[in-house]
Image 1: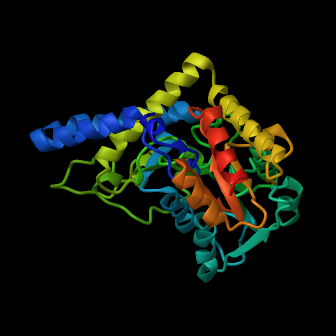
Image 2 (image 1 turned 90 degrees about the horizontal axis):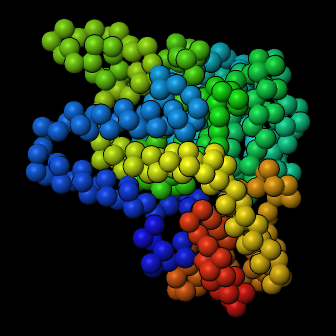
Length: 370
């Protein structure tokens, strides 16, 4: 991670830096496009399919359930707009969700859909609270795996099992957890998922992933179709609207080939680490560093929002500096070579596995003297 030469970079919950493999893949793509044009298009298309396979491996699912989207918002809208809502249906979401997991559901009001927002408890998403708002009209629960401001990691397996027992589907915004924590969709059977590659996966902006389980493939209307949506993709002379039998039907046109190449290189790196060190190695490293930062901040008298139980913690540590404007503290940190964000009424650090104790010490020194 060349970013370490210049910064104590603790802002992965916003936009992560490119990994070295991702940056190299982008440069290679630019060189190919400049010197060879579309003569290498089959190679580019092959990289897209390799990325599809890599995501299937990362998520323990089938390639037929993986589709690519420009960003998380597009993945959420794919489901929100395509689902066969009936007037009187309801969706349940926790309060404090990032707007991308709020507006697409609220946008269904014109179709008679009610959005029920469930209060959090000190940043926590409690399953009992969610299901207190579920009734016979509820078609879906949509939630973030990790809260973007609180850093609270939800108990997905419990929520999914209970929802399915009550006939309710689950949409997961996975962007703040994917790449750090293991998500086995064979065990945690979410119905729909979307995430972006530019945060914890250390890829470029403008390319994300969605998962549509095969059992729901025909349930969603394809609201956007194009040449790439159909089975006989390259039959331009005799076009026929015969949708693919895979989630790729939701990819209507040309892929962002450069971003796919870069993200593919990063995801391959993550998969290699998991194969060598185990599926929980990255998450364990991140949780260790996050706990260390929490301890350091508390030792200098700064309040944090770190969840009490390890299974609910993430790489996000949000904290306050009493009497100080969070934006001023963030700017002070930037001057000292440390990158963080302002979220949740405080300062948010987003710690990745390549960070180290020296990065944390630099941040604590800055905020303690702010």
